[in-house]
Image (cartoon, rainbow, N blue to C red; front, side, top):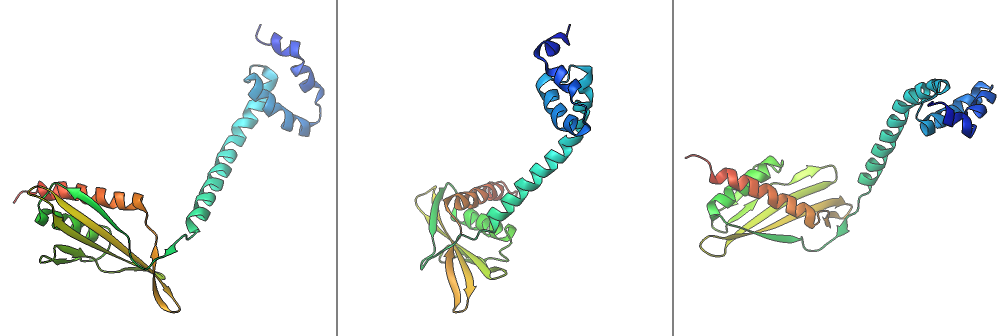
Length: 194
């Protein structure tokens, strides 16, 4: 019989002795979790656990989102004198690559980029938000007949009492994401029908 092992271990005897409603609220849910709710006396405990589950999930999600919010508010920026420059190589013509970079700058919200064909350079406008401003500059250099190198510089500045101070906010992972966006846009530029 299913109920017999519970009686042998004395679990049910402890529950039947717990006449106080408060002690049943505290003890029965744990017994239901241990026993899997197989005993008829534990159906109330299963119902209690089912009622408490949404509260537990809500508290867990609020705690998790609050933790993420507090971590994201922690501004960790390093003062620098020269902006970081990362490079990546693509198999494409200079013209297609410049068009792809300009489109990525526009899509990311940096305004209408300025294209200098003589220097093979794409420069965005400043993206200003609160006390921060960011500007992107991409230089395209032809390596050989099928490859071009893109040197990407992201200038981030914070407004201080002395003026604008250059800071480092982006790391290598963020530059990789930028280069990936350029690569995806490059494929679209290469396959446009003229």
